[in-house]
Amino acid sequence: MNEDWKTQEIRDAEAALEEALANAERVGARADEMNRELPEAKLSDEQTERIEQLVRRGEAPEGIAELQRRVDEGELSWEDVAEGRALRDEGVQSAFASGVPNMQQAKEMLDEGHEVAEVIENDPNRPPE
Image (cartoon, rainbow, N blue to C red; front, side, top):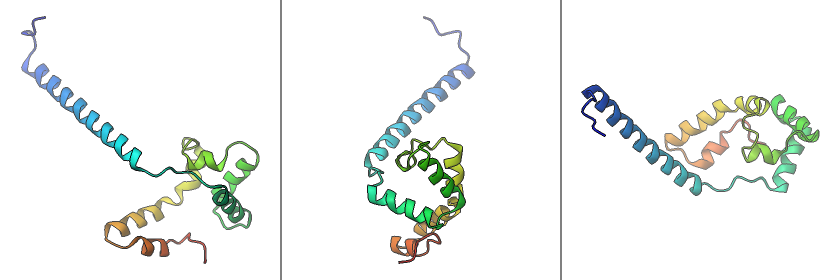
């Protein structure tokens, strides 16, 4: 089909679209690659039990205690939360939202060159040893 009817503006838009699609494919491929490199995020039975113990002793924020109630009622599981299956749930999002500033602080410390052990040591939610 003859494309002589296309204006320069249309040709520029098509070129920009092609470039954006190619960039999206590169980004998607890199995301897939990075996802494959991530360790599998699974809670062991021991870790799940530890979480439940901390919550039941009152050593967790209110939002996490509400999640434990939902786990107890069979509405979801800690594995659902840890593996990301429950991320769209408003209660799960709300429960973890309070930790976002701490995560931002940890990222900033890592970006500044602090060692991981130091970042962990400065975690205000870190249980006493």
